[in-house]
Length: 284
Ligand code: MEV
Picture 1 (cartoon, rainbow, N blue to C red):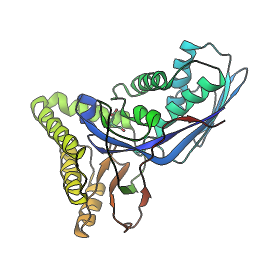
Picture 2: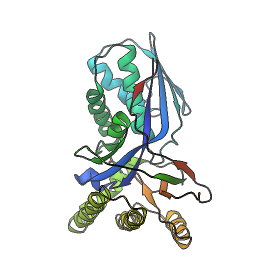
Picture 3: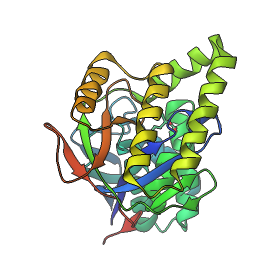
Picture 4: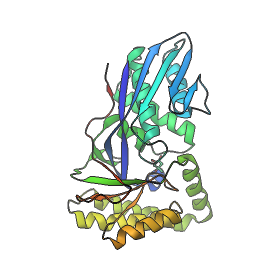
């Protein structure tokens, strides 16, 4: 069986969402496809290489298999992963591969899980691997569309986005970095999370490009304040601003991707993504 799941773009609220604040997130038109076949042992194949249940090489897939084994005891599976989503760059490659793996295992081995079960298990897998996670990535990869999270309120998202990728980094490390800064400065950090919360709540209601771009700039400044930007990103964003464009980090930061509203002009080195309605689906 093959299952596919979309990546995501967090428009507002990354990191503060881990501490119970709101985020606005959209599935995007880049998908991860996972093919699962019955076998007597486990084999995983992806651009990261070929392995058995080797956690170091394929942490999210291996942990997804381990959690699936808790609901259905299977002797093995051949698992092949192909993804259009750049790996470890903030566009939800990990969430999508967990969700697509669970959906493909579920379809191949008749695990009896519905979408909500897949989301809940995928969220657990993310927490297992990252230590701390909001569940926003597996949520959007499972259900598709554009949402105000965590209360699952649909939002209208009639925009496309330009994206610039600064390369992969570890979400777990960035989440840990923010947690450590919060331990040292709890009062300050909680107030910044509250401000990001206000940005997300306002953004969920906005239809105008100009107002949304103002919020993009505000959210980026707050992300910088919690230590998840870097000089290269800051310089690129400043350069875009000189050209009249606003941009912010999407996802964990420290590298990864930045995005802005696509208004017909693609900045150098960028690609364009658009919101995607469909979440996880079994393809075969
Ligand atoms: C990662 O895509 C988003 C973070 O907010 C982590 C999470 O929500 O689990 C950085």
